[in-house]
Length: 302
Length: 313
Image 1 (cartoon, rainbow over the protein chains, first blue to last red):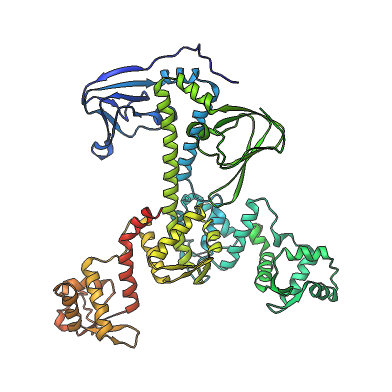
Image 2: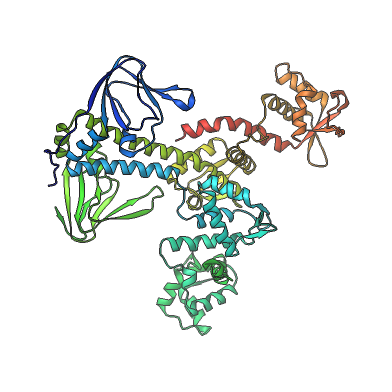
């Protein structure tokens, strides 16, 4: 069991009697301190709003915890409205108390503070982890014949996702480099030549984020040839599994049951009932487009 | 306490009333995030968890299992309470303050995520090519813009349904008024980015006149070849007076509507100075009827929006 060393020297807090009108803490204070109100009343005044009263502090409440423990700036002036009794816990006092605490209790305090800090940071942070995928997803909603103002597009995206403009600009450059978005004139205008391709790119990015292989780029040569063959058929062409395998074998594809099961993972077929599997050409087109624009998607296009 | 590899220490939702410190080995915390997706986090030596379980008896937010044979220090709530009883009273206040601050931060984040996701939702709905949208697809799209939970997303959709902009079914939604969704999105965008009020926000007088126009058009309107509907000035004035408690139609009250091109004077009255002649010189007014209905609806919805977003949380 880890315990604190109670023999460590404790510096006691200071108890003070303050008169009405006395300022007990203000943003200008260099020494950070916690103030516990024992008796009386304090008010929080906002110096940025002509010292407007923001809230009142009643006995038992304390102020300045964030300032002392988290080094947060003090936002308000705390002033006694009536003669009051306060306990002041300054840096030295707090440090001596914290040192005397069992290590595990100190860990609890730190864990709660860290948790709050993370939440507050996430409120301010961008709403998505992958700005490139997020911007691509945003851009895919525009039509290929729309001419968009670059600045306005970045502002709109930044507003929706809280992505900072410089980060959004970098993501835009990455899309331009991949030729998924095209600048016009002096770069003040842009267009999206193939919005569907951006959707495919988003899927690729998501698989990458999850460290998962992306199916269109993991096809074997035979699977690619089967893809080409299927693209020549009519949408909805239906056969049961045995007939599909026979169909491929007739066209000189060496296809085992294991190969067939793997192909089914690509969702090129949809179940139609009666064990029939219907060809889904939209999925075939998806794979074909991904393979056609592999360099653009991977960012290796010249 | 030793824990063997593979063994589950505690489950998400349990209330172990304990605080844990990893001393040796690796534990793995697994939890469902706001999107209902499983997230894992490794807890190596020095990592701690369960701080809110011990301080405020909150349930554990994740399931924890040992990745390898591990050793952990378990601090039971009884020890915490005994130790706190020995501390100065203000130390309890400090811990209670920190816990409260954590709850407030969590709630603030939830509220902020809820409100700031609303425009993204409108954007997706306004830009979707299909009027029938699968909720699953919508939520997947929304993930690229926000990390709002499925439940909170559904609450936003309910607000849109209240405004009759969409209709929710079990697994799908139908966009009922795409134009209005676009207008609403544009208004929010202009307000947020340009700090301006959209010119689609109408004054009460403008709304009163346009409402009178739509009523007069329904009763006595004349369809024009360009798809617009025209109303005689005399009928518009009478309708304005009748439905707007004796309000008199004046040249001044019509000027902004003409400037915004929501109404057109017939015959065209544009002069060099864009001045409007006296009403006696204007035979009729014309307008895009559907557009006016959408604008009036927009002006009905808009003042309620912020309140709905706050109460809808």
